[in-house]
Image 1: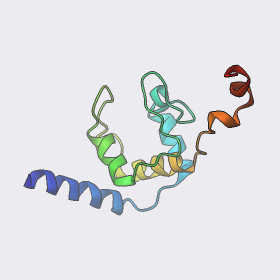
Image 2: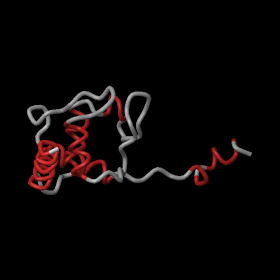
Image 3: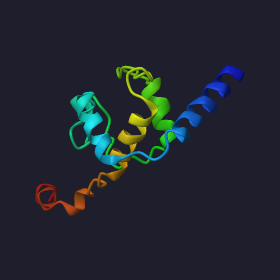
Image 4: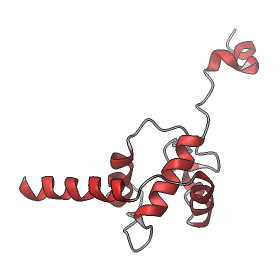
Amino acid sequence: MFKYVVTLIAIFAAAQSAGTGDAARGKRVFEKDGCYECHGYAGQGGRDGARLAATSMPAPAFVRYVRRPSGAMPAFTQKVLSDQELADIYAYLKSMPAAKPASDIPLLNRVSR
């Protein structure tokens, strides 16, 4: 239990120390490191990756998941993605617009009737 608490504190501190991310840099890293391959260019998600656009996940939880994911996603250690790069990716994801509800998409309204 102590090890778990220390790990969470370290992750939280790393996320805080990274400071505010830059969305433009985050987009470049998201594309350069291949995040789009599973999550889509617009973070819309797909067969192999979750939807990330306009995520409601707090930054520390995002960092923790990227560092120690569950499922098929590979872990991205600090050697692969720095804390600042993760902060930039997070800023990029937060800058994306939320998905429209199906009721606001005319084509879907015609199909569902």
